[in-house]
Image (tube, rainbow, N blue to C red; front, top):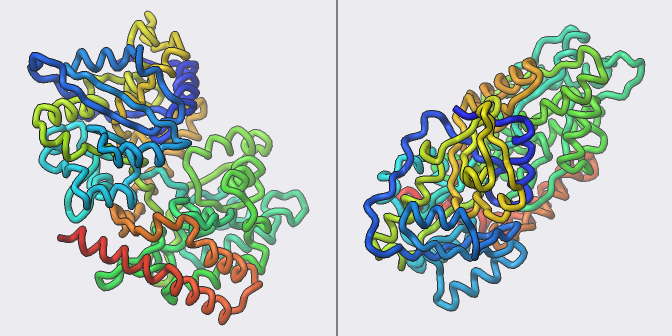
Length: 531
C-alpha cells in the first residue's frame, strides 16, 4: 500500500482546494470498497459522451492527458464542457433552452433539477445503480437525490459527519472547578455558570464564558442559516430538530412554530442575560467564533468541527500548559432527547439526460466511467488514517506524480495536475469509513488523534438524519433570504430587545409571508416521496 508524505498532503489540498468547488479537498476511499469497474468489451467505435460540470478553475480540455486516458480505458469520446461557477446557471439554462442538454451533467438537487425531472428531461437511475458496486453510497445520500420515490442522480457524496456538531468542553476547566462532564441540559447550564463566574483559567479576571456561539446568517442552505453557529445540536435536547423541521404525526412542522422552540429561545435568552455566552455571539462570523474557542481559549463549551481540535492543540495547548479538550455526549433534555446534526451528505449530484438514457450502450459506458472513481482499481495512497483516490487527486503516474523507492507518492507537476482537473473529469469519489473519517488526518500528536476519533465515535452514536433529506421547497430555493426577518427577530428576542408578544407577532408575519407556503411544499414533497 503506497504512502503519502506530509509534503504531498499539502500539495494535494493546495491543488484541489484551488481547483475544485463542489468536490471535497481530497477524496478518500474505504479499504472495503468493492472491486473497481472493468471496462467491457469495446464496441467498434468510441461512445460519444457530452459532459458538463460547474468548475471553479477551468481545466485544460483540448489537451488533457486524463481525458485521453479515460477515453482509451472505456472506449468513449468524452466531450467535456466546463462552465465557470460565476455564470453557470445562465450558461446551463441557455444550453437546456437550445435543446443541447449534455448526456451527463452536475447540478445541485434543487428546484431547477426538480423542474427538469417533471419535464422528463432527466432519467431515473434505479435500475442501473444496483449493478455498480462502487456507487453504493448510503440510503441518506440517495434520499438526497430522489424524487417521488425514484433516484435521479448519483450523489457527489461526502461524509454525513461533515457538520459542525461535535460537543467539546474544556476538560482542564472541569478539573479545576471539580465538575463532572455534563450529561443533562440542566448540568450543562450549571457548568456554563461555573465556567463564567468561577475563574476557570485562574488569571484572577472574569474574562471567560461558558458557551461559544456565532451569528445566524438567515440564508437558506447555511449550517447557521436559521440557528446560531454552535447551537444546532442543542435543539434536539428541547425536542426539536437540527434540520429546522420536526416530523410530527406524519407531517413536517417548522421548529419555530412549536412551543418547545419558545422554551429553547428562553433558555438562550437567560444564558445571554447572565453573561454565560460570548458577548459578541450575534456578531461573530463562523470562523471568528471558531478562532475564539480553538485559538484564544476563552470559551468553555462549543459544538463545532472535529478537525478544529488540532487548532486548539497548536494554539491554546501550547500557550496554556495543561489545556485539554474532551468530547462529550450531547446533553439530554427534560424529555430524554438529545442528538447531533448530520451533514448534508451531498454537495451536488450527477445526472443523466433522458435522451442519453435511450442509448443502452451509452448509459453502460457512462456508469462504468463513474463507477471507476471510487474503485480499488483506481487505487489509493495512504497518509496516516487517510486514503486518497489516485486519478482525482494525483492525476496520472509518470505524468503528474511519481512513486519513489520508499513507496511515497510525490506530485511532480502541480501546474499540469491542476490543468488535468482530476476531480472534474472523474467526479465520483469514495467516502471514508466511520473509523477513517475526513477529520482524523495524520497527526504528530497521538492525544489529538485519540480525541478526534473519540469525538467521531460520539457523532456516530448520536447523529440524527434530517426528516427533509431529499425533499425540496420551490419557495425556499427561489427565496434564499426568506428567513432573514425571522432571524433578526430571534436575535433581538434572545438579547432581550423583543418581548414575548412581539416575537409571536414576528413569527406570524413570517408564516403568513413564506413560512406556511414552504411548510406546505415540504409536506407535498414528503407525500410524493412515499409513493
